[in-house]
Length: 388
Image (cartoon, rainbow, N blue to C red):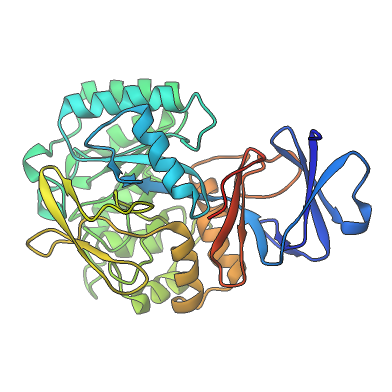
């Protein structure tokens, strides 16, 4: 096989615009160019696709599990790789394994695993710690008894971690952190996201201005928009620099509310898709447990609804390709915008400068979608993955 490859036969979406009757040229895991089909030079292996769309690979900033595995249960590099492989079938070429609130030893083992996992080009792009610094009043499916404020030892650990792995996303409640602590973390490169919080809009804005970059799963587990109290959700939509992850599965947030949020978001930051996926994605497993509690699967909609015995939503059964289809079908998004919400926007949010676009010099991470927007194949650093 030649070192250089050209892919043609599909519409190519480079992250910003479509290219028809064109070929994507790449070598050594990097995009070279997009050229007319007639301009494919000698020395290239030519792969002809059967229609559909070739687009940048999806990036997921919140993945709790997949392939039958939950990160909390077995925080090892192998678990992270299994999760990445499970989600790759749905177009995700980079993800942040996400640890929900747990004990200190579990958190520390997870950090150690991430340090090892990011050394390989296997789809693990960093780590997301969703807890333990959350607010019991907005605990969701997390264990309130393990929640606590950020302390000096935590800050030192998180700064050391981001120096080792490059991308560390930390979800913190406004109730558990000070603006000064947020500033120190942000200045060190940690991506601070406010979530699982009953913060007022005023409290939230102080943290955003101190460097908090986002909110975690907009509308879920946070103070809502009231006509005299905008809450965390209102502050996030109004602040021009704050990114908002959304779980577009029809269960976590009503589509009407997401459509309103998309129209309301102010500034250069955007809403972007996350799955908040649990172990069942990419697995035939019938059920699973979270912190020792059984999670029930209720079929229906774009994906099953996952709940605890008391009815609390416990993550999702969502994959990123389903979120893209949901965006087009239910959120009135154009296909380019839906794809950007799964690729370019999370790449920009996570400051991944070589992902999210199929342009010269970028990583050749790509997904081939058929006309129904189902995944036919993915490429990771130019290596084609198993077809779905």
